[in-house]
Length: 438
Ligand code: XUL
Ligand code: CO
Image (cartoon, rainbow, N blue to C red; front, top):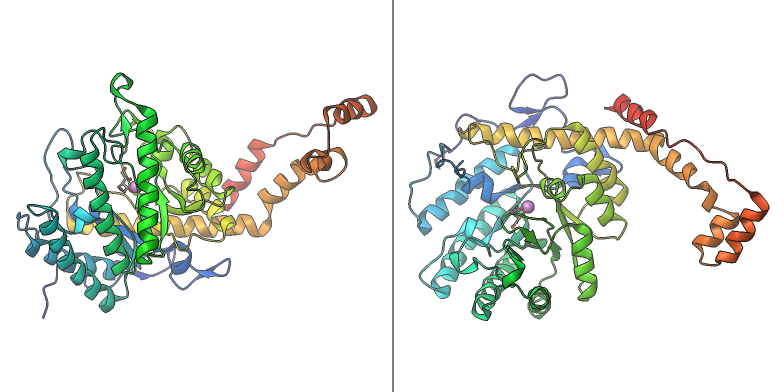
């Protein structure tokens, strides 16, 4: 008999329907239920974030960890890395999450040098592969932690020291190899410290060039070894640095285009990062969608009263409905998915809280998908939007869109027609309509 790490959850979490009062059941997430032609399982492709769920301690800047994790032995050892893989797969299997995501250093600790670090990573990766085979749980994306080690204090690819760039490159090289070995479907770049605190000491142009070089080198290496996964760039405006170069989707897309990477890299969009940038999550998703760059989602939320990256589990139906309106319009996220880049609160310190958190997030997205699908089916928003722009469907509007109208044509139109008829935006009505569906 193998050890059981979550005895308080004896059975896998099941769908029991909206009326269930069982806290260890899904009320909305029903993996087999079809939404706009896709099963919920395939539509969401939910993933568990290894770093928060299996490495989070509950520490904050004011105090140490509070999390009770009875399986942790307090050592930084490969034995503990390997045991934690069993913990993770028991959790994910009981939860019914089809995917997980990791940074290299979440799953396996560092050795005395690169060679030892990579050997330890290989040992853990072999066990991850074995457990994937046993459970059918797959890797949504891999990434490298290029922000925790002190050498990355000034950035990784954007460090002023080329030797640091080299360390980061060696680390990403290995992380891509392991992601490939584990059948990972995506590889994420989040620029942990790729930004600046002070422009007095910063050559912004060189730093941006180095970041672009780094991504090209990663893409070249992927081609060399035949890694077919999708590359993703994760926007975040600040934290840890004052200004992150991957500020928001607009800044990232601009960076990718300038550097000829737009065909290679899509967006991994995180809700709490969107709000830190002064945007809504729906804005960020929509901005990526219209450019065919919506890759994957880090599903979490912030707190309106706290101005930092609290990484809370999403429970707000308005947030999830807005996300799903865009995601359904895009036709789903595959090969991306919805990764819970979220952590339980410091005060929610028991292992069972990990289940409550993920169940709530999965249910919130399932509910949001059902609401969004109903809104879309009735066409209540789409029809309104279509009608609102109808003046561009023929006549002068169609000519403007086709690039066939000049300023002189516009002037002639005004002379002939005078004032156009302008319609109400009906914002309040539309908000009321969305409430009806929620
Ligand atoms: C940090 C963050 C990261 C990335 C992966 O805010 O979101 O965990 O998702 O490096
Ligand atoms: Co994230």
